[in-house]
Length: 66
Image (cartoon, rainbow, N blue to C red; front, side, top):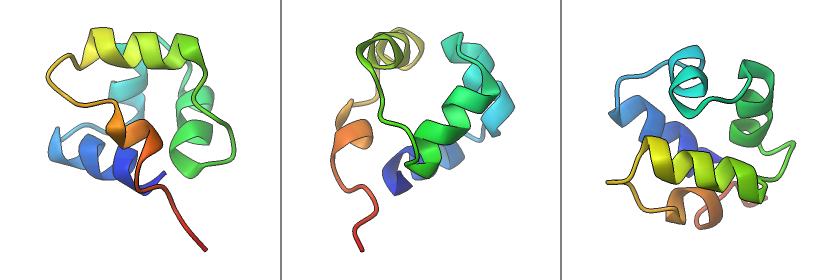
């Protein structure tokens, strides 16, 4: 999920920091960012709580397309 990675880098956070801020495991966050797992409703809710100023479009739009 390229957009999620870009957002994280703009926030100057590493994967561990963003996972902690969201309240999810590092492993789960990494899988969503890598696109090997879909962002479930719980992940989206936690993302909104942790980053209310950021559009959830980073979770659903502009993902890796091959």
